[in-house]
Length: 248
Image (cartoon, rainbow, N blue to C red; front, side, top):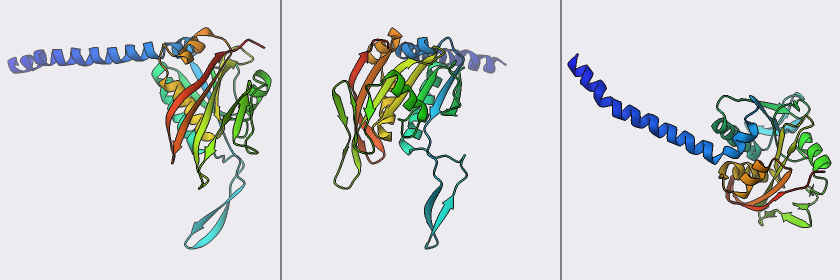
């Protein structure tokens, strides 16, 4: 019994140290992402509108034969980079509020009463397209005719190498409100890697960054980021533009 008591006494400092370190880490997260926490604090549910492509048929090879697969209409596909962006966004939202319910929905099934994060541009997400058309009419993505976007006299050009691989992309964050006045954030890019860059910029922002100041303002806003693409990875993501915009 005495030995057990000594072991318990000896373990107390370790337990206290563990709890203190955990509390400190949690406090740092709260401070870093306070701009997001304040935005989402009144809500217990958050929705992410996912990009999707309806692929009626695709070819695949098996045992030396080329076959075609026909998919049901409700079996949808999405770009890999944007799927990764959704995973990173969910991880970020969990850090901000572990108790919040995060729902993944397709365009057309969204609830305007809930905070909304819409991933992907108009070519893969009609909800994003609707928000951009109505709230940010000066913004245009010229894909697939050209690999660029335009806004306010600025051009954001994506670049490919001689092998036809994307090596530089631009991502965009649009901050506004749903028709029921819940926060609405559209994250997209010229290509899908740009969507991933937009989420990465949000996840790596700190409380002193211009991006955090935009969210704290509660105003309509526009953010443009750029970065390099190496294979399937995005690197050197930086914020190009971060502006609070006048309401419509």
